[in-house]
Length: 206
Image (cartoon, rainbow, N blue to C red):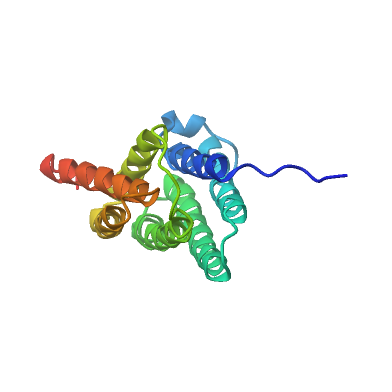
């Protein structure tokens, strides 16, 4: 008797991008969807699921791609940084809703975001190592653009545009070098992020 079928590489990668884009806009929900007790909001509790929803399909993508040990090691490092940074951000953000202050702001918008961003960047590196030689499907292009915009909008929202710009520039350079395969999607995401950040700077929002 065979076990459950795992999603294909393309499906797993798509689910990773969709989850990232949706989960990292939970904070934009109107009034956080209301209170949920103990001074928290419904959005705070929904946000708890974000790392799981992003990292599980990312892991499945690596499994489907038969990734090597180094790639799995990168995913583990990225996952640890991402979950820790996101947890710090979530806790400090929720506390800041009730008792805003410089300490809550620091752990929410500065330390939490920087650790979380570092983790996401490492996870992207791990995924990018599996993209060599794979054909780009047109449906993946707008998803790559959305991912870049999500990355950049989160940076602007945290007043850390530079923290979004440096990895975005690296992603663009990587995508240009590997434009013959799916690595191009990394470059498209990087370009979209840079365009968004440039617009934010021009409007004085970054």
